[in-house]
Amino acid sequence: MSDERIELNSDELRQKINLETGTIEWSELVKHFAKGMVVVIGTDLDLIEVAERFAADDQVQVAKWIEQAKISRAMDDDARRWNENNTMFWSVVVAPWVLVQEKSA
Image (cartoon, rainbow, N blue to C red; front, top):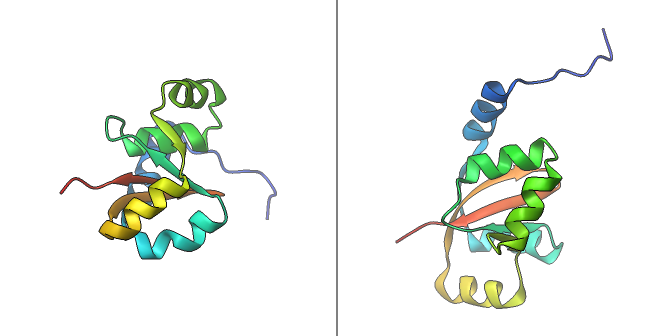
């Protein structure tokens, strides 16, 4: 067996991420929030695209989104609001991060 790392092309990566995306309730995210691993993705961005950029370690694009306040780490104010509303999210894990995007009502 080879130790060679398997590289996915962008279409394969997108398909893999898409298959791993799902809905999750706030109550299921609490433990990840407590570890500081929840990243909030603005509703004006495509969750799959952001996950691809995280998986590809595209630090330049991620930094732009942070600077534009389109992505951020979840904060205590977010958690309070989500807890009050038992918010539902679209989510995907790009280890070690859990990327979440609030579902519209």
